[in-house]
Image (cartoon, rainbow, N blue to C red; front, side, top):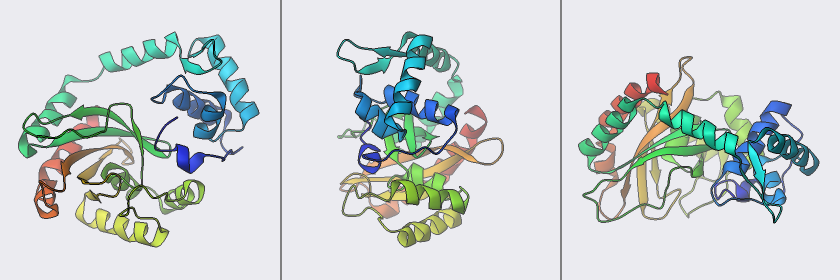
Length: 259
């Protein structure tokens, strides 16, 4: 089950949301890394009641988007794999160019992620060949909003009521000793993000990992994702990584019309 949301959603089911929203959450849960998944895991990750999850899965199986394995676990079906291939083939080549330029300008690892419900999903990762370390992140991984630089850059630009709803539904689970776990602390940091135009994850999501992130805006000015620069604390100070902010913000602006 998705490592980012398992703890926050375990034991939670909700009747909230339209039938389409529930179906999309179930599909996301099935497609999460580590599959095929058990029905109970899909139910918990999607925050949809078990009976509804079962009915949605049956429909998705009929349509070819989900496949049921012999052990009754649920995995990605052929239509979903085909859709993924079409989306990947249609990605503008300039996205890779922009991320590559940011990686060369900073000499650090670069991530691109999309806002996906109550999480972000990494869709691109470029490792710097000059770095003697590799981060644990991977394409397809979903991570919390409140612990990551990209996530906080997105939260800072969402309406206040949406941020409050997120906190009410998922809470602010701790991932490291540095994670912000109170609404007051999170709101204070989001105000700072809005003021300076980028967010910092200072070992809040993973020990020894420090990142800065900037939101990528959609046509309506709403954040649809973000881009980040990732370092390790024992090689790059906070002052040094914040110096990458102008290049980061320029990359976020350049990516906006491409996502």
